[in-house]
Length: 517
Length: 115
Image (cartoon, rainbow over all chains, first blue to last red; front, side, top):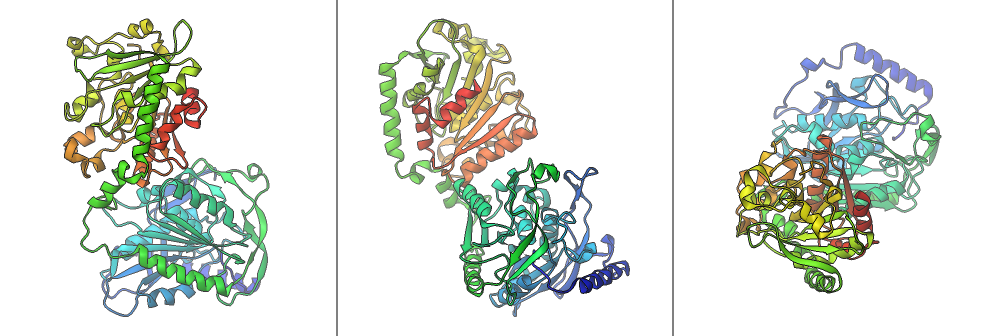
């Protein structure tokens, strides 16, 4: 959203010149852009975006369209490479101070830079004063097209490419950081972005996809930003961190929008579109977008931009450290699953190591369960199958007559724990008049996972499956004799219980009857 | 059995994609092969009923546990199943079950609301 300070007349002349420029055939046709780069390619390059996001016929949402031809400036640090790279995305005013300022710094630190121009190829000069012309989200395919083309360059280390965007380009960057964007625009087996750095992006329009990022995100924004306020971005970073994802935000004190725009003195621009007052929840990143009326007048005009030398210097130090950390060579480490090597994957799934007071909790489960069995009306160890592990406990609420039933299937990575550790869940449902059934099932290694999921299914708590009559499973009438009322059942499980419940949803038969996707 | 016997489901801190399980220390016990991991992974399967499913994960459980839940929700929503993701801030893999010690906790109320 960075600016230009030129007079309107200059702007119009420039726009006119650019239009002539593009009509003069300077932007090559899609069929003429190089599909891959060679050793000597640098400087200005035309390339194809990774598809495009265009407006639907009624303008209410975005749909995937054909690639467009855009340009960028690729430059290298001294040396042979291959180099890690930073793709830079400009603000609503086109390529301005921030991108140009960061370029030499990044190259000094050893990164190749690719400053992408989303406007020239489209015949645009700015979108600050009419935000609907091209939104930040619509530029996501530009970033992925840029990634795709520079990844073909022999001097680029394709596993170490970062996307860094400013303002309108920051919105692009946040959108590009979503798992949705990666899945939509990165072909299977191709490299994706290693990290995302967003300077003063707008976080005022929430779309569900933004809650899941494909790589670390680093947001930098100013405390006094009145164009893209810090608050909503702080909340977003909290949400991401809260779900265990790698996102941070740095809020620079006393800094305005564009605080890294060297030499730009304090400027209030009355003509620019601003969504600073908006706090809108979109159904998806592709819309539908609210009409002007539905935005409740939150779209306004005017915003302040100002260079803040202290904040700018601090941001340079922070970004340098962040890039160094995020782009570390992975050396000889072998990744076994997604970004994880074996050790990291082990750590990720070892809950007992990960949670410091795991043993305290397990002891508490056992203690509370013991108390529940003592205090509540229960029928314990009712066999429901032929395997000795196939037993269940029933906890009954007060009162006569049929009751809704809640079935609980415990966790423990398929080889640990017991229904006796989870009797306490009866406390959650009995007071509401719901009967609770906590089941055991045969564990690994007594059975393998196929057998574990298949045999003691909830069906067996209901009626016999065709080819399992030999096991004489209990009819759901048994629930009635126990005080339950199956037609209002509710299955529920934790950990592997999650798998088991899902594997045993009614009407789909056993797991092996399901069609793999 | 009546096809609508089970009215709703709730998975808490669940594992729905078993491929990483096959590739980590747990497989020393479980002995999964790529094929068994795949055919027992709910993310790879098609829900055959459209019963509401509440998929719950602790906010402090780490990126993989979160991904497991999120992937299931997106996969099943694609198939038209009404899946809802509930991330419970501040909860780890063990503390989240503590929610079910009381009928008035957020999780207990969410499950009761399904019935």
